[in-house]
Image (cartoon, rainbow, N blue to C red; front, side, top):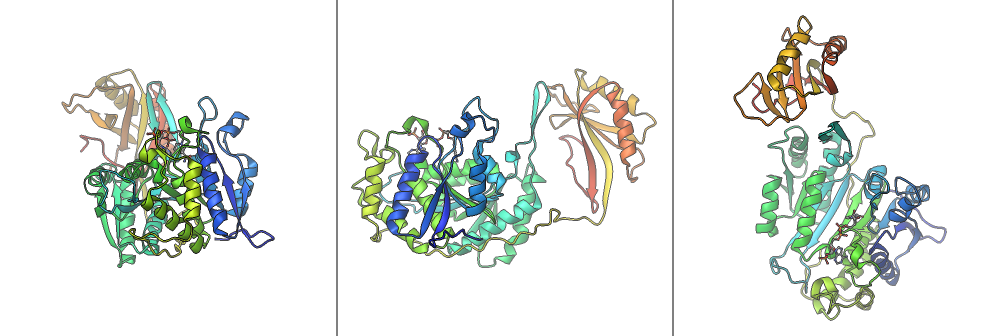
Length: 488
Ligand code: NAP
């Protein structure tokens, strides 16, 4: 990664103060970094609510994109998507624009921050895939009453985030990586992460690797969080699990994060803009400061990072100055008093708290080739046509059978929200007007052509409203599609 150096030999960082409590938190972090004397310079840029309100739909103006493309390192406050402006979150836009594929979210027990888990030594990291999954944002209303969101997971995306998790574990001297998925239900999408994890884990024999079903992971995190070290997971799972893990150690005020890409890295707290506290100088800036600590390590400023981390821990160990989220807002110190106290403690070392020895992370090598998996044989064996119909399954089935008569394909089954409803199974299904109609080659074993599929589609469309079509493919003899519940 190339860091941009200024003419005075300093490392240039893009700073986005953000919305709500963002500017207060960022101000604390910048004051602290400046107090360490680290050779860094800021380029302050806008994104979020103010930008949406000026009418820019993405919430991220060209000057900000230009700055990030140059500096490749960002420290940012939380961004809001104000109701009524724009459709997409500026945060997600930034993560995707710069392909920050991995989101690292560490939490550890903080001295002087009492929680039901105090004394159990929680010290774990969620590594969340950051650009794929349901957050690809591909949603369609399939009928006026049925919505769909595509869950896209790639082998390449899984490989990058899995390698990042193992490399991160190594850099921090951690010994265990869990992979948390829902592969028992979503065999292809969530299963992709599990299979990739199992394929890559042997390359890291020094690290213990285990798979865990994500719902059990949530359960275990609440029951015995100290058993976890690093958890790698898909985007949505990671979003939820990492809010849970931040609550284990005293809340969002203590949860930092790093969005890591091979070109650009963006450092920010897990929390949002907490609008009710904005401008009151009462919130806890620790999460943003710890995000800045991660940033300093990322740019090779290990000494400044250690100075700040140690000073935060000393401040919390002594507990003379504490924020309202820890002791109650009627008794808490202000954000600036807390920051001043950390600055006073720069240079001191914690007496009771373990301090980790950090090394640089070796980022995964990523091929620029868009195709990473090529089958030897690919065969089209059928098609799913998704239709909107007010008919009940049986009359719809008879209609489709008659429409497909003498064509290259025959109707195999119809499902409603994943459950087979035709031919009848005896199951009671409360159907909606959205059916998946599965057609397969009339002569089993023959390869279907696009012309045959289009001809069938024309026949179906002559009588039924369709909105989506999905080819059924086999790759190297393996079915590239799942069966409906009840389908044989
Ligand atoms: P939030 O801003 O994270 O706040 C939720 C609650 O967490 C607060 O009310 C407060 O709890 C606590 N909290 C958060 N940060 C804190 C801090 N630094 N110090 C002390 N307590 C803190 O979540 P939200 O209210 O759901 O979201 C508000 C806005 O932020 C939304 O527009 C959302 O889209 C956006 N957001 C942005 C990001 C991002 O930029 N990465 C992330 C999440 C949300 P108490 O009320 O219990 O005191």
